Amino acid sequence: MMKEQDTLFLMALVGVGAIIMSALAVFKQWVIVAPLTIAVVFLAFFLLYQNRHKFAHLAESLEKGAFIIALIAFIVSFIYLYRPA
Image (cartoon, rainbow, N blue to C red; front, top):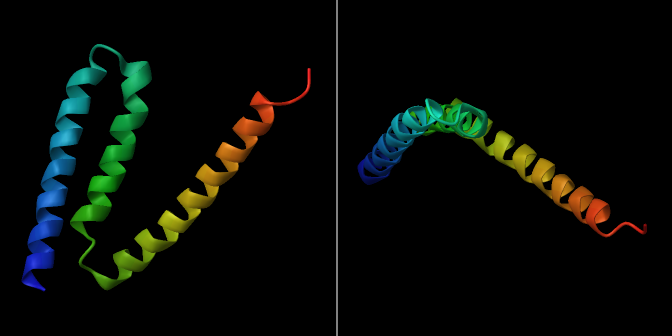
C-alpha cells in the first residue's frame, strides 16, 4: 500500500511540473495552451486525492465518460471527413 501511495505522489509531482511548464507557455500562446493548463490542473487534483476511496470511484466514472466522449468525437470526425460531397 505504501508503494502505491509513493507512486501516486510522484505522479502528482509530475502533474504539478506540467502545470508550471504549461503556465509558462501560457504567457506566450494562451489560446492554445490554456485548455491544456486547465486539464492538467484538473488531473493533478485527481491524482493527489486518488488514494481516497470516494475520489477513486469519481475518477473511474469520469474516465468512462471521457472515453465515451472521445469515442463519439472520433466517430463524428470520421463521418465529417468522409461524407459525400
